[in-house]
Length: 105
Image 1 (cartoon, rainbow, N blue to C red):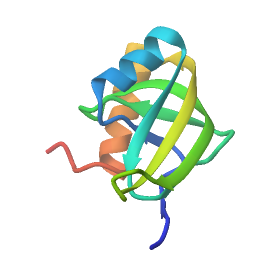
Image 2 (image 1 turned 30 degrees about the vertical axis):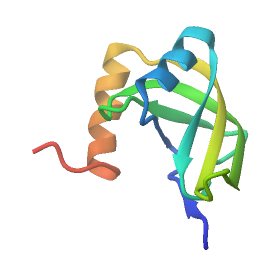
Image 3 (image 1 turned 180 degrees about the vertical axis):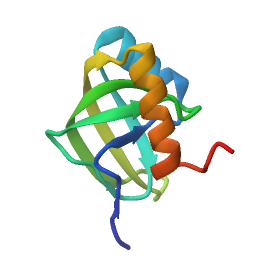
């Protein structure tokens, strides 16, 4: 058992519903498999399930635990700082592909 560290600039949603709640209500949470460490208190870039940069969020809490099914999960609560402009999203998405995700080419 060990913790996996997330990049301090990446908060990638796996669910469109979790992202919708964040963008619609200004606060949200996501659940990730395995124990992970998110930078509580820091601002990070949030990515949609299709790896598109969409917003800047602040991590409010990161709780790693075993759920009732015995799986290791991490719940991350966050607050929307602001949505990215179209140009910011395009540039940040391109950088993320180069640094974190598979190459687009």
